[in-house]
Amino acid sequence: MQRGLSDILVEQGESADAGESLAREARWALADKAFGPRPFLVPAPSGTDYAFFVQKKSDVCLLRLYGRQHGFVSYTNNLTYIATRPLTSCECAE
Image (cartoon, rainbow, N blue to C red; front, side, top):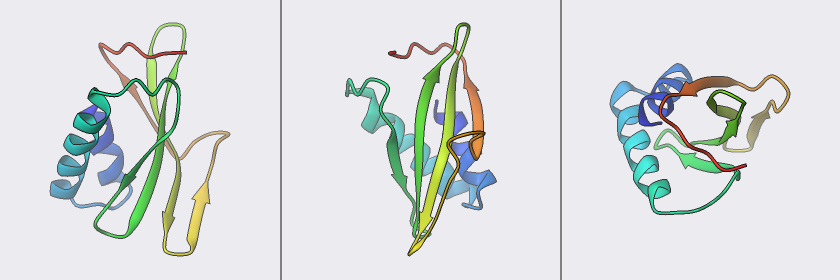
């Protein structure tokens, strides 16, 4: 999960250091919670907020970035998604 988050954040323009740090913090924040299939937000120091969720498919879980907001400008794509990464060794709720 951490690698997928970091890769997507860097792909979206965050620095490698910020991507790693944000991904690590998000993983720890989510580890103790039982959110179920709800979206979660990752706020970056760049001023951009990233909206993710994990989707369970028959054989894999997918980390999906579906929205981002910077100031008053927001972009959402919940049809084809902005970015997707498969998660290995993942168990996700339905």
